[in-house]
Length: 543
Ligand SMILES: [Zn+2]
Picture 1 (spheres, rainbow, N blue to C red):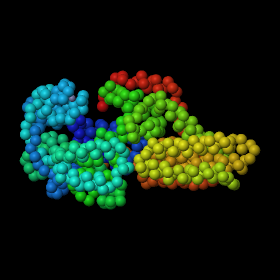
Picture 2 (picture 1 turned 90 degrees about the horizontal axis):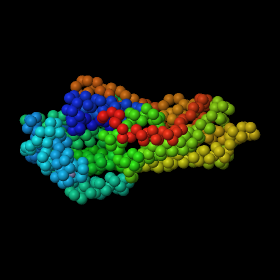
Picture 3 (picture 1 turned 90 degrees about the vertical axis):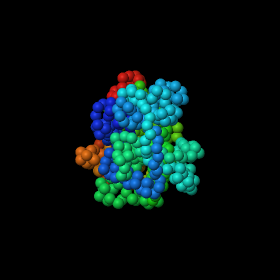
Picture 4 (picture 1 turned 60 degrees about the vertical axis):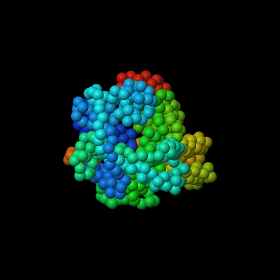
């Protein structure tokens, strides 16, 4: 599981110019903020790095040179936006003007935010620079292009030869539509000062850089190489990138599908000998209270803000249970509270708390059952079987279904406890009470593992309450490395030495228990009103 901060996007240079700081400073601020959020929310990676590293620059250079050598990159002249006042070329996003399609007065150089149409900056009416408002002119400039048309036949063969029916509908439809229009060469260099240098011996390309979309996707590969070096097994990245049996999953949002289903596979085909994507589980959009999120209107959920008021597992649970896997979904604060109270508190938390409280009070350890009867054995075997069923849902990135089935097992176990009434059995048949409590504890132990991908913090608490030590699931750890300029930079990794064992473990009878504590907190309905009132107010922090 590797990823990182993309450091070469034009919004970074735009923000750096606006704030009067170096792009490195903008990157540092955002990157640190991501790492903090990942740590607080328990989001773990083998490595979360960034693309402003010597390792990434080397991987990008190698990719460019090899594609050039193999004839998949060509040179061509194009029209670039030029600022006479600043004496330099401008990225598309630095150009603004009247949309040639709908007349919107502040259309971006590459796309109109009002009608959504893509265009070239020179098609805008009255194009001007976003930096100083001065008019933009256009000049001929020479660039390298990725020859997508040349790779198209092989790309189509890959898409039709292998079975992609398990892809989500959005990925299939986007990809088919793009291919129907036919692929054209795409510029991979730009007249910019910020980015990976173009690795050619030419005066013409001294002041040009590799365009961000080309280097950003290479980040998956370079992060794998960096990970391999960090774990002192420098060649082990090849297991994921050269072994045809490896399955590469790309977790993205739907707006990024073409880059992962067409452009990155085309680059990998051009390079040769590299694993192509196995699955591209792209999410749809998450709306907020029925409306599209907007950071400028503060119609948004700010991680650094809501994590101060809610436990990370509460937020993770609602995000997973309500994920926009196959269609846009909606974050509603009322629904957040309902699910928290009904599902986390009243179902899962109640089960764990009931069983552990009685067992701890009466025995202080896992009871040793004399005899298990059919109803006990049935529940235990259902718990064991759940690992295969839920595991295959996780494998197919049906995370919502996996979570639903885990919750269904907790509901079933709750019914079992209510029917068996161990609190009554303690007074009339202590041996039978021991068998019921043993069964309940064993199911709670299975469920702690089944819930751990979704609720790592409460599962860890349960792990310890059940008398185990060590880490149940890997947790994020911030570490540091040296960056391109010899300065320290931070990255995120996980404590994988105590690898989560995704198997139904046997709970040893006689194992001492620790005193249980409530896992989740019931939230009052007024919380929703307070959250809704916060929306649309002055942004908490201009990002
Ligand atoms: Zn328009």
